Amino acid sequence: MFDVAVICYLFLGGLSGGLCVVAAASALSIPVSYLRAGLALEQRRLLGASFVACAGGLLLSALFLMADAGNVAALKYLVLTPNPGYLVLGAWSIAAGILLSLALAIRWRSPEPARGVLFMRALLVLEALIGAVVVVYTGLFLASMFAVPLWNTPWLVALFAASASSCALSAFVALCNALGLSAAFSAWMRRLVQLDGAILLIEAVCAVGFVFVALQTDTGSAVVAQASAARLLSGDLSAAWWVGFTLLGIAVPLAFDLALLRSQRTLAPYSLKALAPALFAFVGGFCLRYCVVMAGMHPVVGF
Image (cartoon, rainbow, N blue to C red):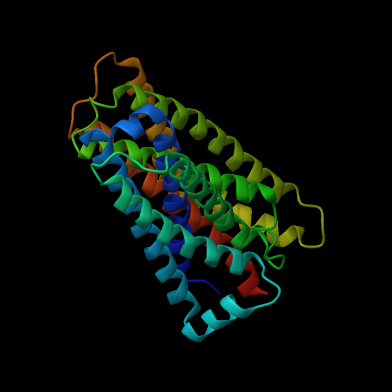
């Protein structure tokens, strides 16, 4: 039913949508007086690179989605359909996110004082909203498929949203450090690390809720849902679930976050301590989507 292309789409779409929210929120945190006076070089570099990353990630996710569909002619349906659903909304959100992220990247690279500050801030709010829609849609993409019992739960949407948010926060901190700007934005980076730690805990709770609901399903599809959950906990997907997702995707990034928060020193630029949490979060985010997709597909194919 699905192959690795759609898993890549689910991962990149969630990551890029979350990064849109984080980048837009970071830009909105800059006082209006600073915008009118002209941005510092460090702010322009960080936000410009962030919005470029948003556009690139969304574009890649769209390409993976089209590769999975295998039918470019189906794009006509997305544009002309009179009854838009989740798929249409997601496609339009990705397209709008790409264009808006590119426009913001160009504007935030400019050294000139911002004109139309209120309009600029409105675009940033719109960018955050579009990013949030893309994040939520990656969960709804699966949860709306009622034929797959494992996916048909709001816990899946919450789990994917928490995972995407954690990946996006880690990516933003890693990008700031890779640009050599961790000292300039140390206070903001510390807040993002604190938020990431809280979201990782929420992600763990959502994972427990997701599996618990599947095991407790009492409908006619209970056997299928429980068989899917068993594959995650003790079956052929258990290594990817427990090691790839739970250990590398939640426990290790959380340990890094706690270590960074306990340290009183500013994170050194170009440090592996900033890059490592993002890499582990990416591995965990991909393993999560791989496990959920594969666990849900197998019983359907078997029947």
